[in-house]
Image 1 (cartoon, rainbow, N blue to C red):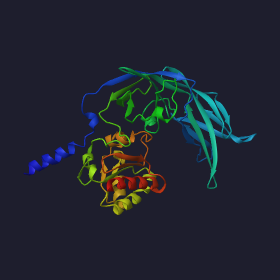
Image 2 (cartoon, helix red, strand yellow):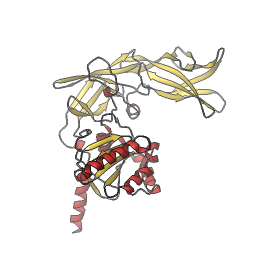
Image 3 (cartoon, one colour):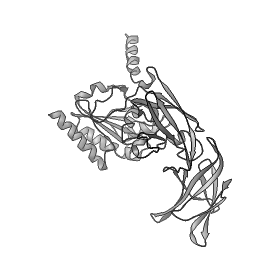
Length: 377
């Protein structure tokens, strides 16, 4: 009897596997070429710091040591010296940008250019100074799928000369020329590399990206991206207490999926409010916490649950952006893997809301009330 019970438990846990590992995959390899003279709209800010000896300095992406001095005539600006750069010295005033070129291999380039700017602001009686750094290049090619062709761009977000996870874990680093106008414009044409990307009717995920930016490989995914006012996709997961949660059971009540992470301050701040909502609507509403921390922060997430005495079910898989639930719901239009994310599923199993909840969770509360009203009718 004990062996049978263990077999049943193991079988239940297998249902929580990432569905993208099931079934036959197709792959699409895209050759990329480096395009220069196009400044990214995205970039990174680097704080200007003062060392123990009182000198100003900043470390640019790629461990570029930078010496910074203040200008005296005229005052208010800075002089920047970047090793192995052309020009070797730059003078910038607040709000100004200039082009600098480094001897650095990027794709087919032996020299890579960047825009560097200077920003200065006052806050809480303190002066904050930053350099803003963004590449003057990208790599691009054509994603060819039978019966379909889409222009594709990949961006070196942090400008360190390498196309890697340091870029696409932070920002949208893939552009899709969906309207075939030769450019990437508007939120609809940008994606994060961790998303499930719908192209030409196929759900795709990035399988490989060459750090030198010479190619990118996509694979088809068994994951389906949910849509508003459509049925919730089938999935099942196991909570921290061992309970099995299946989306096929969502028709009985209104459900909220609360995607959160321990490093996300707004997510953590709203956990207590979510607990209050869960207790107030205990008979009509079920909230399920879906933690999207990586393995290194699993303990921090578990401690937060205990500290805040959360009673609603929690799913902690410690897979970060690799978690299949996060890839599915985080890839919904206008979400783009941003948290906090609240998904409201009504009593008919239809997704009625997917967003950040609004100020004081007012948008979420209204969506819940609408869903409860539909259930009552």
